[in-house]
Every structure is written in structure tokens, then in C-alpha cells.
Image (cartoon, rainbow, N blue to C red; front, side):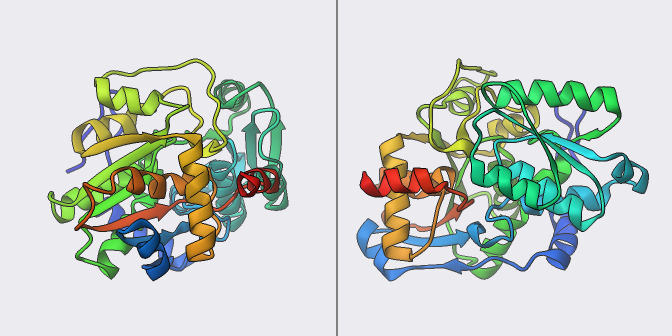
Length: 327
């Protein structure tokens, strides 16, 4: 039986995740889960890297997009789907909309990652730039969607999105059933909420640890204080973590199921981007590097545990990468 959040949205269960997997695997191959000896030596940790940067859009969210679009009616698809995004959620919905023949309209903040905007346009989406940050872009696109009859897809308060991205944790535990800790970043919280639902259903002793940017602490403070906390404008190169507030459905799941939450600095994420490049020969964006930064921060606690870190995306801009490598 699905549980309800306070505003009546049904929480996904393990059964929903299993349903999602049958759809997701029709369109997307499972991503690699790899232990790199060089990364283990550099970090002195037993780490398995879940490569969501290998997805066709370079990020994990496409799983949720595919599953959500698969569940819309033909009429809803024809009207079009609208989202607000700093990049990866928008690319996910654009990719899924193209797969299912639906128009996609994406609101992004002015000055958003140009590579991500170009990718969304290349997938056939209409991109509307508005406002100084994600929250401003979101308010604008929500109003437009209400006015024009588009199906607005919230970045987190969508059970189908959470069930879709929860297939990541399912794949991790099927491939490595002995994983004891999963570390995943939190922007909207769908990935962490999904990991919690799967891990706690399989074995309550599996720890799920969330990580956010210290410079964008709304989700962290919300979890710590057990109440919604919003912040002023945020400054982080990790666009996927650059949120000023939390989302209702995901924060409630995290309140109930998450084991721990840590924050990492800009420098710690930049170091993790370099470590991934040097020791795993793989590209991580800021949010995707955050779990490695968290693992390093918690190194003593994780010393004898088998840890899976979710490299959620590799969509880093060339300018960011140059700055990090010049570091």
C-alpha cells in the first residue's frame, strides 16, 4: 500500500520501483557499477562508482523522465510537458518527450549552463530563459503552464520521477548485494528519496547518506531541523545542488528514511572532480562529484564499509572544468 505525504501525493514503494524498472530498461541500459583500484588507493576506501554520467543525456534524471512520460495519457502528451530546470531535469524531460512524441517546454534561469541549454534544444525542446535563478524560472514556467494547459512536471513532487530514478539503487544492490552504504547528492531530492525507498525495503541496515553543497544548504537544514527551511540566493558551481528550498514529497521521505546528511564545500567538490578524472578517467559535474567528496569527508566512519557512490551526472561546462583543473 502506498503511503501518502501530507498533501496527498502517493509515496512510491518498492513495488512502484519494480514497475518502473520494466519500463526504464526498455529504453535505457543499466549503467556500470565499477570499483577502481586507483580511486580506492587514493581515497583508502572501498568504493563502487555508479556511472549515471553514462546515460544518453549524461545524467541520472532521464530514468524518471522516461517513466513519467510513459504514464501520461496520449492527450496529456499532445498538450505538451513543461518543466523548470538548471539543466539535467530539463534534458531528461526533453529526451523522454522526444521518445514519446510530446512537445517539451523548459524554463531555465538566465545564464544557465550553455552546454545544457544547447543539449535541450538539440533534443527538440523549447527553452525559455527567465529570471536570475532556478526558483524564479520555476515560478514563471508554472504560471505559463497553468495558462496554456501544459502538463507541468515538478522536479521532485512526482512519484513517477522518484520511482524511475530509484531504479539506480535497485541496479546497485542487484549487482553488488553486499553494499552497505549508498551516498547520493540532493538537489530536488528524487535520487536520495528513491535510494532510501529501495535500500530500506531491501535491508533497513543499508545506510543512505545524502550530500548537498555547503553553499546551498536548504535541503540539509530542512533535514536537520525537521522543518522546511528556505535560504537566500545560492552560489555554487554545482547547478544540480543550487536550490534555495526543498520539495515536499522528497523531504518527507528523507525525514523518515535517510540515515545521514552532510554538506561539502566548493573546494571539496572540485577536488572530487579531479580525483574522478585522474583515477577513474571519468567526468563528473559538481553534483556528481559531491558523493565522492562526502565519502572523503566521512572516510574514518566508512573505513571498513562497502560504499556505492552515485556519480549522478557528467554535464560540467568547459569553463568550469578549466577552472577546476587550473585549481
